[in-house]
Length: 347
Image (cartoon, rainbow, N blue to C red; front, side, top):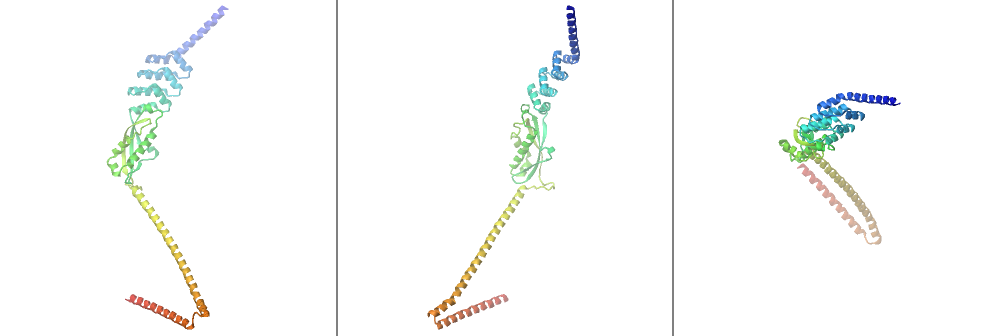
């Protein structure tokens, strides 16, 4: 019985030794690389990485790069970042680049930037070597910014914005699109506050300085280094069908609108005058009807006077003579006026 126990124990020990030897030789290459590079990693750490489904070669390579660059980054930090879904090599390269450029960047901040979906290595390179952004963005089919000065002249402007990555605001900061939009808004506002387009053409640096002093990089992932006006021109001077003097066009359209309004008002007054004239004619007809009605009552009144004895026959004839004399005088005056008119026409 004791012999069987010793045999089983011997077999178990032999299997354990074989497993340890197998594990040693399996990780020997990585262990030797780490040891020779000064980035010591124990066999048990490599075994733990394998059990945690972390690629040991990736962690060892990242640690070797960090150690050779003079950075002390533990394997636990690298494993934790890998398990969180981060890009270990990219973070290590960013830390190395930041250290060589004397840019303060901790592993925690670099890992946070990487996990936020930003390219931390590209951010460090942008911080070291600022990048130039075109405003407006030509990829969106907009070649020039369109702005109007106070005198109504349209200007076409193109600017170049030099930005440097701000690592402290890279997480949660606005992107390049915000920078382009803010710079475009600032340029349009600055040109709109200029008295004439000549001021902009003579001194475009004034526009860029005014925009730069507006603090457009607030709450963004970048720091604006400079804003340079690359091109500025007056719209319509190249023969294209563009309106150069927007102010004159607006004034013309306003004058045309005022003209139509005044014409409409005059037409309204004319219509009211015509209506008043028609109303007066109707009243004249009404008055004439009343006159005729009153004249029709005269014979009746005369007859009534005859019946009552208030009017005699001689009085009636005398009245008739007066009416006839009046009619004759009116006819003579009318004929005299006609002869005078004809003589004046002949003369």
